[in-house]
Image (cartoon, rainbow, N blue to C red):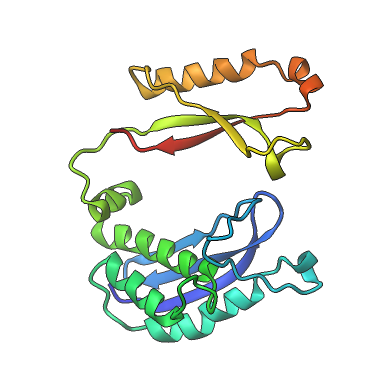
Length: 211
């Protein structure tokens, strides 16, 4: 796969905060990917490069975007990548730090994700099929949904240390039944009844790999 054009831009995520989007063009078309960002950060996480300037209350990602459009673009344009590993190894080497602090993990991840989509386009398959091929999965099954029911930490206005309390419908016979179980559990925990506990209720799905 040869990249003929690679461009990064600053967009806003679902919280209204800036994040990095990368657009890649190959002979088969255009692929895009944008980077998610959590409200809380672990001390051992790879570094998300923010501008730390007045603009967007310090959360701008112009520096990361600039790294995409200059250093990363220069290193990747016109190269022939055979597989996803080739892309990721180049990005890791280009950054050269253990925690991705030079170019920013938001810049690197956006490029890697866009390339994954571009490989899927190149191979004429869906993105999930491309990910299956990368992971060498022996079979393709739906994951088990984990429902985030009660929030603490930075996600809620309370003093609960744990950030998320999740329920996992491990006994469900199908994904449809698992989703049904999680939804009913959430609604039975009536937000009005729980308000006295100052517990933040939110239904959010996280997919866990099935075994």
